[in-house]
Each structure stands twice: as C-alpha cells, then as structure tokens.
Length: 307
Image: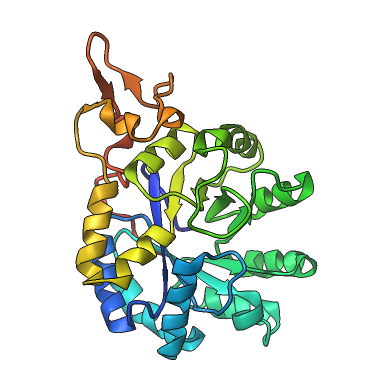
C-alpha cells in the first residue's frame, strides 16, 4: 500500500482538476513532484460545495466551465502518475455530483483500477459507509477518511478504523479557508485521542496557509498538513507553476537552526514542544533545533516506489 507521508510534517496540497487547465496542471504536478510534495488532493470538480469557501468554489466553477469530469480526470492521472517519483494523488470525488449515478461498489472498482493512489469521498451518506468501506477493502483501495475534533465518538472511531491512506482531521465546522476559532493548539487533544484509535497518518486541514501554521500543527501532533484555499489562490492570478513553486518553497523550512521568529510569527500555539520529536531550544542559544521539521516534506532521501 502506498505510503503517503514519510517525513514529518508531511504536506498535502489541494487543487481542482481543471483549474488550472489540464495541460498546465500536468506541469504543476510535475513541479510538485520535483519539490517532493507528499500528496496532491485532486478533486473531480463539483458545484456548490457546502464545505468550501469562495476561493475553492470559484476554482470548481472554472474547472466545470472547461468541461472537466471524472473520465477526463482519470485519463489525466493515467498520463501523469506513471512519471511521478514522490507525490501521491488522493482523488477527491463528491458523492452526489460524481458517484451517485453508479452503485458505490462499481465506482470504487473504477477508482481502484485507475492511477489514483487513494480515494476521498465527499458527502457520502452514512447509510452507504459500510458498503463503501467493504468495497474498498475488497479492492485494496487506500481510503482517506474524515472527522472533526468534536465528531460523535462512533463517527470518529469509524473514520479512524477505516483510514488506510490517512485520516483527515477537519480543523473546524464551516467552510474551508478560515482558521479554527481556538487556534491550532486546541487540536492537540483530539489528535492525541485519534492516535489511540488509528495507525494511519493524521493530516489536518481547514485554515492552514503558512509555514507558521505547518509548524503549529506539527507541534500539536499532526503527521501532515493539508492546505487548500491558499493553494488554490496561487492559481487565480499569474503563472500557476511559478506561483505554486514559490508557495511550496515558502512552506519549506530552511536547513539548520533558525531563529525564534519562525515560531513567533505563529503565535503562542506554535511554541516548541518538549520531546525529541518536537522543536526544542538549543542550550545556551536563542535558536531552535527543528531538525524534525526540515524540510516540511522531508523523509528518506530515496524516492518512493509507486504501486
């Protein structure tokens, strides 16, 4: 099974397939792979998402206006994925817009036979979850499951049990793009609880935009950070490849000790932790040792073999 995050913290970026147009998106994905971004959550575009803010909704509308649909996305993946050495593709599909016309088992089989590395279903009715998970298990299709910090216990445990690619902890209720009201430090307890319920990596999204946010979430215990709206913003104006390359570089921590200003910009919630896996102060200096965080997408020096 594909390993999504080998370094700590891992990085997942979100884009709608078709925004930018697929020929440009091909260059974007190649660039992300060259920059060793761990994961691209690539959505089959769908309209009127109840969980997305205006930036992502505009992006979906642009992609839909270009006629991008599931067959086009699967053809795109078949062309692009074989050339990737590091980046994994988690396909995001909306049940109502993309999946509903077909039986859930047929859709799962179609994705399992595609070049996608994992599947994340948006808006799946609870009554279909067992059939969905059973179908994915039969086809050995890695799944991204989701929950909220205050999801009911049964819902949280169900998501934790069936996460096989990674567990996406949605930082707060509401639409994407906004930071959680209590700050990312408030997620430490929910992440710790999930640790006892799943062996899958825990990725946190909704509201993360900057290097400081990545540091704060890693300090709170997340294995990876998902960045959506801020990624999509790079596509709206200018050259998507150039803009996103600069964005990724800005998210990547420089080698060696860095000044406290890295954490100061994140606020108190990004303060260093006290374990070997978390940032610690160097004795007798004003610097922080953050070797566990360098770079954001760090891991083995060898690229992963694709499935």
